[in-house]
Length: 335
Image (cartoon, rainbow, N blue to C red; front, top):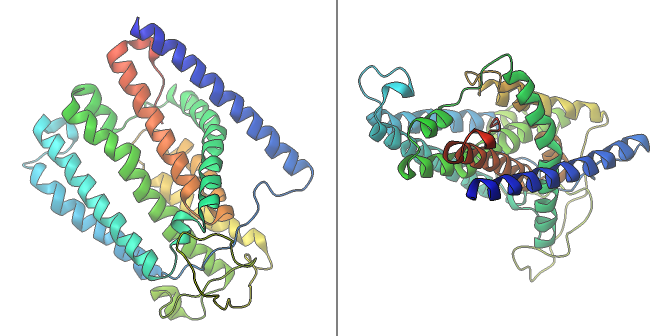
C-alpha cells in the first residue's frame, strides 16, 4: 500500500515540477524573443573580499577536513569501501564539522566586509521573492539536468560516496549524516564558495571595481560602502532610525556586459571539476552551475541558488531512499 501511495505521490510531484518547468521556459523564450531581461539586475554591495580570502578558505577547509576526518580514516584505506560502518559515520560527521566551520568563517568574513545582503537579501519582501524565484528556478533546471543525467548514465556509471554509503548501510546512523551533508551543509558550503566568494570576486575584477593589485589580493578594508544602482530599499532586516548618506550610484556592469559571462563560466567549470570522480556528473553539474550563476548575478543574493541546490539534493536523496526501501519501481537517477 505504501509503495502505491508513494508512486502516485511521485507522479503528482513530477507532473507539477514539469508543468512549472514548461511555464518558466515559455516565459524565458518570450523574454528572449522580445529582447527583455529574464531577471532584472538588483542593486547590491560590492564584493569586498580578495583572492587571498578565497585561497585562505580553501586551505582552511583542507586543513579542517584532514583534522576532523583523518582520525576515522586509518590504516591504508584508499576508498570508502575499506572503512567500517563506524568509521564511515565518524568521517561523515567530521566532514560536516569541517564544512560547517568553513561556512561560519566565510559568513563572518562577509558580514565584516559589509556583504550581509548578498546572503539574505535587502529586506523580507525581497527574501520571500528570492525564495519563490529559487523554487521556479529549481523546476526549470531540474528537468533538463535530470534528463541529461539519465542520458549520460547510459554510457558512464554515476558514482557518489554518499550514495554508496546509504545503499550499503541504509540505517538511521548513516542516513541522517548523509542527509545533513547533502541537503544542508554541502549546498551552503558550495554556494558560499562558488557563487558568493569566487564568482563575486571575479565579477568585481571584470568590472574593474578594484582600484589596485592590493585590493584584488586582499580585498577592501575600512568602512563598507554600498554600491547601489537604484536607491534605498523601503524595508530592511535591521531597523534604521536615521537617514544615511548613500554614495553616488555606479553601474552594475561594465560598459561591455559580455564580460560578466566569464565569472559565471569560470566558477561553473571549477564547480563541475571538483565533482570529478563521480562518473559523468560534472557535465550536468556544469550546466546546473551556469543557471545558478546567472540567477545569483541578477538577484545579487545566494538565496535563490541555495534554494535550488538544497531542493535538488533533497529530491535526489529522497528518491534514493524510496528506491532502497520500496523497490526498483521508484528508481530515478540522483544528480
